[in-house]
Amino acid sequence: LRVFESYGFSGLGVRTATTEQFGSVPSLLAASPCAFSKELCELPVIEYLKVGMLPTAPLVNELANWLEQRPGVCVVHDPVRYSSTGLALASPESFLEQRKRLLPLASVITPNAREAAELADVPVPTNKAEAAEVAARLFERMRGDAIVVITGVNSENGVADTVLTKDGVTFLGCPLVRAEKRGTGCRYSSTLLCALAAELPLMEALSRAQAMVVAYLRA
Image 1 (cartoon, one colour):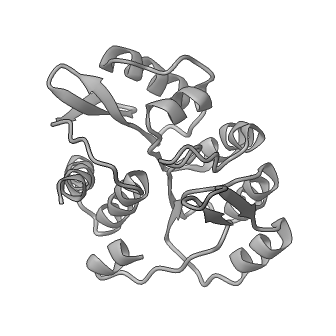
Image 2 (cartoon, one colour):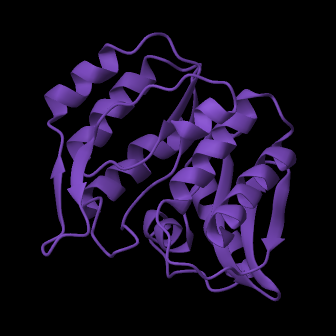
């Protein structure tokens, strides 16, 4: 929500789970589908939606049902599978339902290489060429004007984000920054959503999202 505020937007959240990642026993408690559905239905009219952690398949289906009634919403979907500490934040069944039901509804998806591979049911890409192939498999499941962004794939001079649209593939490179920090994917997708809502050109919006993550890792 702080990212939204930095762009002058008001954000609302719908809880999908409560996690404890740094205790002696990491744990996750998913929201009930009924409670999740109720919170969704209480939202005001929205134009942009950032989707993150969806631990269970029933939550995915509740969200998909809700979105199907709101075809004009721009959806930036960050499919979260594991936390930086290794805690599973979504079940395999949830990811299967995300592939089936949310990819066709998303405007933009922003998985990392591991998440993209699981969504596409292929090995994890280790270079830009493989990432482009994975992106193409995901794009096949999405609508024609959708955008696939696979973040943080190894490249010759660091890492690169692989961007696939109906016009082709582009690679946005940046230096590799090693840091023990959480929430980079969330920050990336939130910044991208805000930049798109501010009507910035796509490549500028993507560059801003990437630069924000690099700055966060370096801080």
